[in-house]
Length: 171
Image (tube, rainbow, N blue to C red; front, side):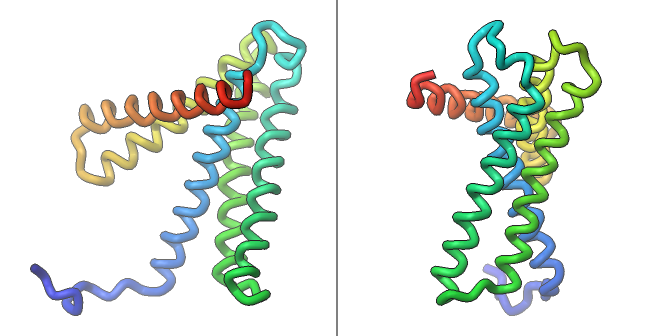
């Protein structure tokens, strides 16, 4: 077993950057999953299909604000009423992740005909989630085939979570 004292020193800036990327990615995946669940729950051919962009931004901003509120309050609770610089940076990274997903999901709405918007946004969100799974597997040393299988498994789990969320909400 290697001696931990022999491990290369990681700079604080490198650790902070990795933590910020993790916070942004976590929030992006959370918003993507919740947004996918909300879109899947829409009734077939309903009036909501004409308001996909509003749904994308309403869900994304609503989740980001709710998370930001809870995060700030819990940071103060744990910090004895104070918010540390780390908490401010983490909150900013989380909002960035939510905004990224909202922008990503907006692209198909802005470039495709209205009749394709809903399915295209759902596809973009599914690809984002599975591509993240693929990147996770590849960063862990998996082959392309194993990473693709992992990406599919991640997508299946994400869709199962969306279905359960909708079933529990009565959709």
